[in-house]
Length: 282
Image (cartoon, rainbow, N blue to C red; front, side, top):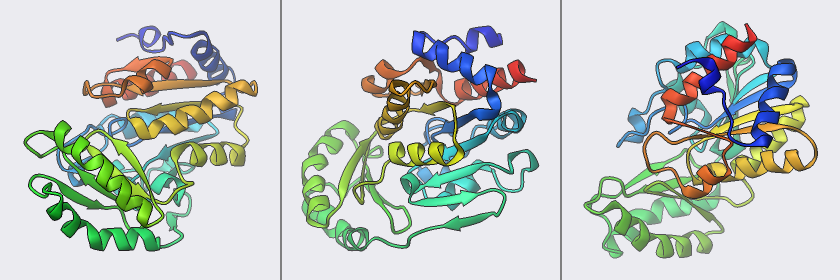
């Protein structure tokens, strides 16, 4: 597909964001979700790996930009390993904001900064196995421990993932509230984590830190709506941005697709956008 076909936002705001990025790339940030955006969605989250074209595309694009950031609910170190981001010379300014910004990995130091375990998450992690068993939802569900800052319950492997998801939403919301946590729904996953931390907060803080004049953000799920909202707020302040939805699996939420300036077919489409930007800037 030609670069002109890939870089074709459908909205005036998206076109303005793209034009600003191409005009002043040295003041622009490209920020990307990981699962479903840089990495295909897979049944086992531990098997997720970045699309093979992701690092090569970022290697071409990053030197032209102020920064590249990966914004993910995963622990920062896990995203770095699964993404293959460490030790890549052209990505020496890449930042991974893990646990929705509660953790941070900087490529130039290769260090992860973390605030430590949240007591509510520790309590929920211990309670969840018995809680799911009593709820009659143990078979086919599984718990993902996100390193002390969040814990998630997946229903993708159940006989009826949608029914299991809906059956667990209310009781898990109650469990989260009892331990001072919030619940974040995704595609066949319900994540329990501390309030006041989301991709929008993480993205907004980072953009202020690097004094970005423009941002491209790409995501695929409900958790990315907060980041989309952060870009929309910047637009209201006169700072351009481009919102990209990765929709390759057919499961992307309608709310995300409705707000996107550009919809692409999954991680393959996101890589095509990154390559097209690099083509335009080289």
